[in-house]
Amino acid sequence: MRTYATFISKKRFIFLCASISFLFVCIAANLCYLHLAKSAYCKEKIEAQRNRTVKIDARRGDILDYHGNILASTYPYIEVGVDPEVFDCQDEEKLSQLTALLSISRKELFEKAKKDTYMSEDGSEVKCVRWRKISPQIDEMTYQKIVALNVKGIRGDRKYKRSYPSGALTSHAVGFVNRDFDAEFGIEKLSDYYLRGQDGWMEIERDGRRRELTQFRGREQSAIDGMDVQTSIDIIIQEAAQNEMKNLVEKYNPASACILVSEASTGFIVGMVSYPNFDPNNYGNYPLDSMRNRAISDRFEPGSTFKIVPVAAALNESLVGAEDTFDCTSSTATYKGRILKLSKEAHDFDKHLTVREIVSKSSNRGSARIGMLLGENKLFEYASLFGFGSKTGIALLGEVSGALPKVERWDSLTITRMPMGHAVDATPLQIHCAMSVIANGGIYMQPQIIRKIISKEDNKSIVFQPKALRRVISPKTSSLMCEMLVSVTEKGGTATRAALDGFKVAGKTGTSQKIVNGHYVTNEHVASFSGFFPAQRPRLIITIIVDNPRGKGIGYGGSVAAPVFSNLAKTAASYLGIQNDIDAEKSLAWKN
Image (cartoon, rainbow, N blue to C red; front, side, top):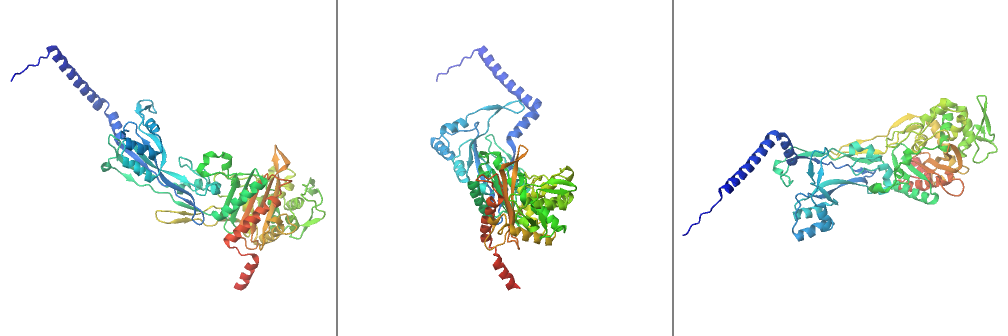
C-alpha cells in the first residue's frame, strides 16, 4: 500500500493556529465580560425571556333584569397572533387550512409574519417583534383546530367580550364598557366594583421557542369572577315604554324625550327610556349626545307639573282648603305692598276658581296666588323637600341637581313665577320623584335601579331594600292631593287623554316655554305628564317628558304626553294583572 504525506506550509499552519486561538480568546473574553461586567443585565434579560407573570382575566359579572333576563354578559374568545421570529410553515396543506380557519389570505398571513424590529420605550435597545395580531376573535372550537395543525409561531390569547343582548332597549340604564373593559356610565359604572371581579396571575417558565414549561410552573392565584347584578328593570315594561317612545318620535319628531316608570311604594325604577338612544354593542357608531341619559342629565323648567308643590304645601300648612276660591281673572296681585303682574293663562277664566279647579284646570294665576299666600321661605322649603335643587340619590353617572335658587337670590317676580314651574330647573327624574311623594302617602322614596348583587362563589346575595328618606306632607294632605289630581284626567281637566278604562288616574300635565338666547319663545315647548294609577292604591308612577314636539300648534302636555301614559298604563296593567277599580272593590268587600 502506498502512503502520501500531506504538506502544509509552516506559515499557513501558524496563521491557522493563531486565528483559532484568537477566536477562542475573543469568545473567552466576551464570556468573561458577560459573566462579570454585564452579569446583572444578562441575568435580568434571561429571566425576562424565560420567566413571565401571566395575568388571568376575571370574567365580568352579568347584568340581569328583575326576572333574571340577561341585559349584559361576557363571553370568552381567542385572539390569535403570530411570532415572526419563530413562524415556520412549509407544508402547503397546513398553510391552506390555517388561512381558511383564520379567514385571511396567504399574502396577509406572510405579511403579518414578516420579521421586524422596534426601538424600546427608553430608546436603549432594538428589539425584535414577537407578536402581531392576526385575527381579533376566534371561537374556542376553531382555535382548537388551529392548535391541532401545530404551526410554529401561531398562538392565541384568551380574552373576553361584553355583549348586550337587549341592544338599544336598555342602553341608557345599563350603559356599556369600552374595549379596555372600563365602565363608562349606567349600571355598568354604578356597579363596577361588584361586576369586574378580581384578576388572577401565575408564574410560568418558557423555552427558547416561547413555549410554556408546565413542569416549572410557579405560584398561581386564580381569578375571582365578578358578581351578577340584578336590576329593578322589567324588560317587558321597558319594551312597552320603548314602543311608546317609537310611536311618539314618529308622530312628533321631538329633539329629545324620556319615559320613566317606577313602583309607587318602593321607588324602584322598572322602566327608563331615552331618545335618542344607541346600541351599546356598537357604541362607536353613535354620537356622544345620543348616549346621554335624558332622565337624569337634562334640565328644563318643569312648568305645571311643579304646581303640586305649592298646592300640597298650602294644604299641608292648613293655609287653604280644597274648596277655597282665588281670583284667576285679574292679571295683577298685591304682595307685601307691591303690585305684581301675573302670567297669562293658557285659557282665560271668567270666574274665581277653587283650589281643586286650580289644579284640574292648571291655572297659572291661581297657583301664583297660592304661592304668595305660602310665602318665599315656605315655598322654597317645600320645593326642597319634594326633591328639587338636589340629586335624587339614584347614583347613576351624569345625574345633575337641577337649580332651585335660594330665596335671597329671588327677584320680585319669582314668587309669582315659581309656583307655576318657572324660575326653577329640574330633571325628569326629579319631577317623577316629586309625583311619587303624592302616590306614596307623602313620603319621599329614594329612586333605586339595583335590586340585588349575587355572588357566584357562595351563591349569597346583597339585597337592596326600599329607602324612605323623609316625610314631605301628611297622609291626609297626600290623599286630598290625590283626589284633586284625579280631576285632572277627568272631564274638564287638562289631561283627559291620560284616562284609563276601569281605573282612576291621578296626574299633572306640564307645558313650559323654552328659553332661547335668554328669552322665552312661543314656538318651542317642553310637554310633560307625570301620574300614577290606580289612584286610590298606586302601583306604578309614569312620567313622560317631550322636548320640543313638532306638530301643528303648541305641543301641550295633555295632547302629546298624556296619551303615552294611557297606552303604557294599559299595557302594564294587563301584564302585571292589576285589578281595575270595580274588581278591586269587590275583592275588598268579599274579604271584609
